[in-house]
Length: 306
Ligand code: ASP
View (cartoon, rainbow, N blue to C red):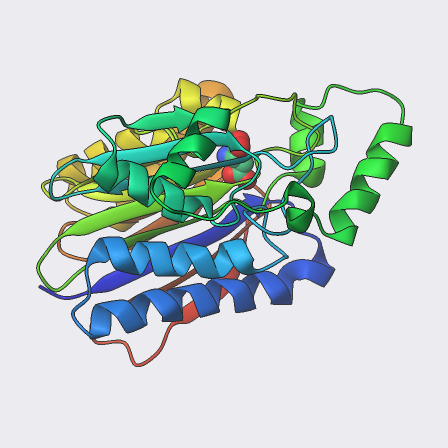
């Protein structure tokens, strides 16, 4: 089976001065994932490696460098799914976990549950031997200043369309196909800027932000989570891959539906069971990178709306 990896680094109106960093971060993530696949590592390992690179990169809204919520705290969400077994793991609203994708992976393998939140998720992290971090360690100056400016500004709905387009979000995600023909997907985010404490978006929710099934395909979404949840966008995309037999067309069809039905703002990356890649977005920009068998290097780009 030909290996493939595709990653995203968010879909929104990414400011010009951040374009290069988004492209570089996506490239590094896809390269890390490809390195795993090329030594016959599993799709799950490739996805985890790729997402961790972006969680550690401060430009993205995931792990270190994430957006602050209304109370000036970082609250992180992440999820993973194994396309071979349909096993899934997710965490939400964790404040003391630097790489929540790895905690989601532990939930997938080591918990009888699929989804753990808040203090319970952090307790599980300790039970499986993962170190917790100081919440302050996740905050970067850029985000602290953005939060100060937002607090001083005239009150506007933190979750409005205008707020989303203006400053949300660089959620990260990856989908991979390994040499054994197994698909996996993962997503990680700090959520929307200035969100209500406890707010969870689509990113860790199976079927909404991510879905993988070896028999159908894999997809990860980014964008305005409240809209993505209502349209179950990842499963919608994967179903289109199965129906149309083409990942690129499926991504376009899913985004067209998302836009038409709900005025959706977001982006999708996806893989077919054969390793075709697809991506589409309805936002001004989306950052992504991919490599498939037969390519000499990762292609990384920041796509602008047509
Ligand atoms: N979907 C994420 C959320 O709503 C944000 C993003 O993708 O950037 O939390």
